[in-house]
Image 1 (cartoon, rainbow over the protein chains, first blue to last red):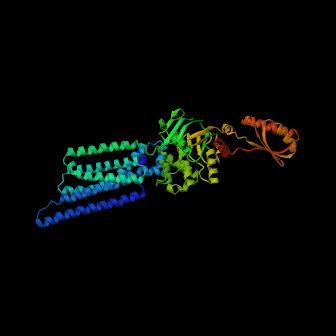
Image 2: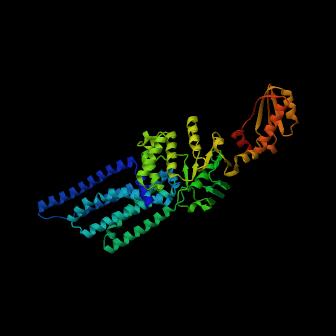
Image 3: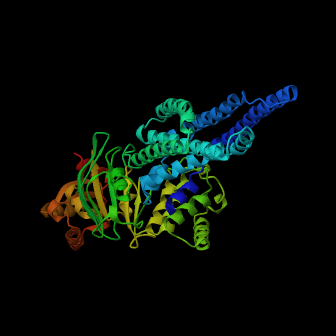
Length: 230
Length: 308
């Protein structure tokens, strides 16, 4: 674990990726803020006219906010992870690290943590806006926490798929295309089944557990990959 | 001692190495010669731990390299890392920490000392990708020196065609002689003869030969030429040489006679004895000898002969 942390410190995201992260962070939160402002404006305007708050349009805005977060995961996870190992391999970094008794699995894990870290910064930064709006929109605190849990677990799940692809496909362009296709499919499925997953605590727990188990399997297979023929 | 036993490596369905077996004694300097894609780098990569899915065994002091946790082998790579957006200092600090140099101050002091020694201190905070190939090689040397492992592998160290730079490297390597076990790979045959104690030749994944330098010369059947420059008495010299059963291939031209010594005399001690015997008999018979010198066999010649 100590070595993994050292590699993680060493393998920072590239300058372009760091810039893009900052930009995306700003864009994502501006869009979310606008959605929530629009929502508040509609509700309050109606309230001023009718003298009562109409929550019938709430679900539309909420769905938009959640879908936006899943889209962010769907866009960024493949970008950050699906060709990360291939790039390190092409740049001789894997070879150099292996020659100093660092295991391939430690490299995979460090790269995975690096991707997850970036992705979570992006996603978690949206939580304050969403949680305040949702709370005032009638969501219970428990339901909001469960929603965030599912978002984080979904981010971990998609990241695992992407790192798995990175260790299975040597060509970085093909890897990123496949990762985007698979991520898109899973994002759509996840959005469609989100309401069911949020239906009760046990449903959320089962859904999260399922995604985590699949993630762990993918990660352990990725760690033992022989694609770089080392 | 490094012992390699029946090393086989297959990459993408292609046999890179076939039953490679040899031993490298402690503190010796071995050079593995071979053409491009002959498998010489694959041997080093297997020893260093980059390739792990090989068949056979690599033992270091009778312990399998796969189970040794310390970094007893360090490698100067042929290709540089391109991904890093880090400074030279951070790069060296990272590897220093991997080498378990826990005290950061001592490590930093060590890095600074080596950077001054190799005139790289002005590049301390330069991005490592901005260095030219020469400076990068010296940064790699510093990395290796910080680790201070007992076995150092140099993959194509003399790949840069800069005589001054290569001479510098040779000077540096000479400081390690007797302290470390060094293993080189090389395509270029220059510079190696001066420092290598053992030579291996690899061709298409097969080890053609491995042994100490002298025995390799014997195997290659290279008879070193002796050249005698004569001031007076060429005819006498010719008759003496023709009468000697160990002397072959006599060529004479003006005041110069060159010849080779027979194969069974190629042991270094015997050669020297024979050479001094011949020189004495020439002088005793009144031949005025201006110079008596032996030409060293060229590695190119050795290489061609061994590979047929």
